Amino acid sequence: MTLSEIKEGSVLLIDKPIRWSSFDLVKKVSLLARPKKVGHAGTLDPLASGLMIILTGSKTKEMLDLNAGEKEYTGTFFIGASTESHDLERPIDATFPISHITDEMILQVAKSMIGSFAQTPPLHSAKKRDGVRYYKMARRGEEFQRIKSWVELKEFEITRIQLPEIDFRIVCSKGFYVRSLAHDYGEKLLSGAHITALRRIRSGNFNIKDAWTIESFMEFVLKEKENYQNESLSQFQ
Image: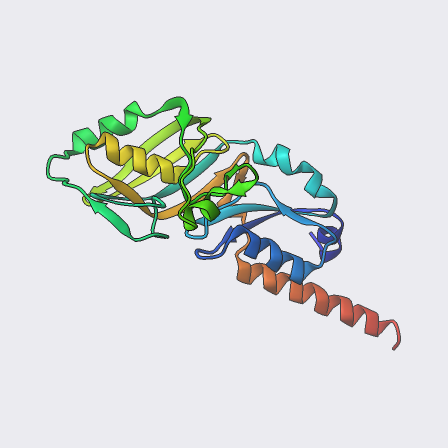
């Protein structure tokens, strides 16, 4: 891949750092590579890290198709406390007992949640109602009804149990909110829960192991620009 190809149209896999918004990443690619168009196939919350598919130039037309595939995530639930955003974006608003929770219960509840169901998006999400993002209405203290979406949880594996923390790996459909899963999982454990870590490791056929870091992408672009300048200068020598 060359910088010229990126300008014309490319699919870039980039490992989004924590605390970057999806827009931050798109803006960074735009400033570095200077393609005419930049978009992405699926957002990630600012407090999540991992795979984002960035599309440039003519490839932005494939945005919907590339976002349609299943997603795979790893992360950590904190059991016994909830937040309004279901992650660390908002402070803890309630605490719950966890002494009744056993390893067997943790595994059985996870198994029971696999399947298709109508999911309620978090209050603090990018979903829209009447053209306004949920998180904007939530921050203004407005009350509104959240619209459920039909989603599928294909795999739900518990990879570590050390209460109050539980590590997990899931495979899910497009449009699935892992933060909502944390909230619902906590309720099914007769407690509460929120996410303290979340990482997307796969989207469709694209894997995080093939992704650029921000640093490596910057180095690539700078090297490409340097090579172009050297080639231009050599023509006049």
